[in-house]
Image (cartoon, rainbow, N blue to C red; front, top):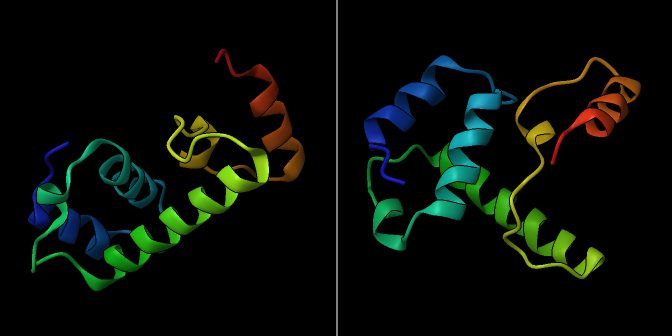
Length: 96
């Protein structure tokens, strides 16, 4: 996954901390990039912090559920739900 640091910087400048776009960028780069794609002095510090948090959460979840760290994330990870009931319904109607 090759996304420029300019694109990431602009996304972070134009979105809020809980933006689904930020979550997609972080997950995509963590899961589908090699280390050369991520090493860039121009990446926003907030993006790097989000990457560390994402990786920590994935490792913790993999230990709790005894599954590989980098399974494909749930689509619900990339959009919001109005309530826990909405989230439960969304997960039930998912086709994969």
